[in-house]
Picture 1 (cartoon, one colour):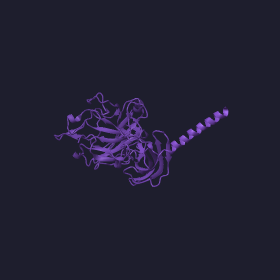
Picture 2 (tube, rainbow, N blue to C red; picture 1 turned 180 degrees about the horizontal axis):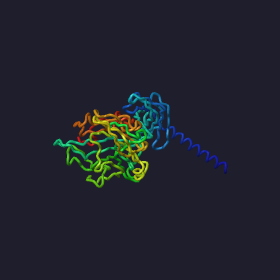
Picture 3 (cartoon, rainbow, N blue to C red; picture 1 turned 60 degrees about the vertical axis):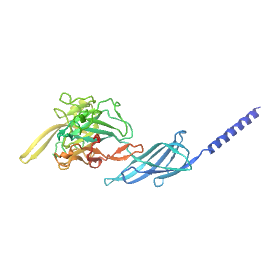
Picture 4 (cartoon, one colour; picture 1 turned 90 degrees about the horizontal axis):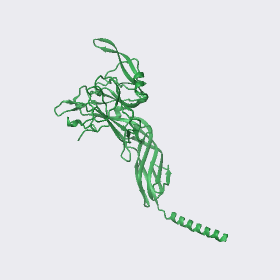
Length: 403
């Protein structure tokens, strides 16, 4: 009896085994060719160490390979729906310098079927350290139809240049204490380690209240209202994310959430330099407000040389350690630029809205960061080489400008 049972079970296992083999034999395969393209805008791009992963959406089975030839790979895959991801290295030339980095490619819902099939996957630059960047600064104001200067509509846009969610809680916006149009020998000279500032405003939050998705921006403004109702040449800032507000002054408070004022040298309201002769930065304070105000004051001396004589001068500002700063941009005008007021580690270039002092053509213009490349899902990667001359479009049309 035991022998009969054994042979019966053996027969069943063979039958099911043959059936499984027949089922596998019926799976159709496709000879699939995947070609890769380097990110747009990169010169002399050379890809290397490429690896691809095909993950079947239904079975979750993953097939990987690194057998690329001239940025192309051909392999046999079971028909089905896949998620395709690629990683590798890239070498390219930018601003006459050879750069190295990491590239990625990603595409969901790729249906692979037929005897042969092929597709092209664009790659994008991936920076594990990518962070917020200053996307745009509008500081000059607009002109009314009557020809008058209209201000109060200054703004900054801060962009998530990474591929993960970042939180804006605790971000500070900073304006330099020194002018890019006037150079002195400041004593002590702290520029290699610190950024001397005249204004510090902070986005409130407990750390996870203000998420910013990859490829999205936050808008920070002076006065969060619809300025186009007063001046048709201006913008609607009523939907801004935050405004800087100076309590206890004649500043205009709107329903747009206020930033926390950490410090400002102005006794009234703070506005960005309308001639554009400052540097602007974003960062995060490494200490609380009280500690900062008590321990980071910067007292300095310098000598002013004028045709009528030489005058010893002294003044005070606050100092931000360079390691607290995430991004910076030096701004001037073409005729008055003398120097950068940040360390070269923060910015080696500068940009502008005006050609000369009091250039009337500057009104209604902004400085706007250039796009380096675009991911397969349409997300922009903004150019960030710590050289504002190359990273920013000077005298740009503001993104909030109505057509």
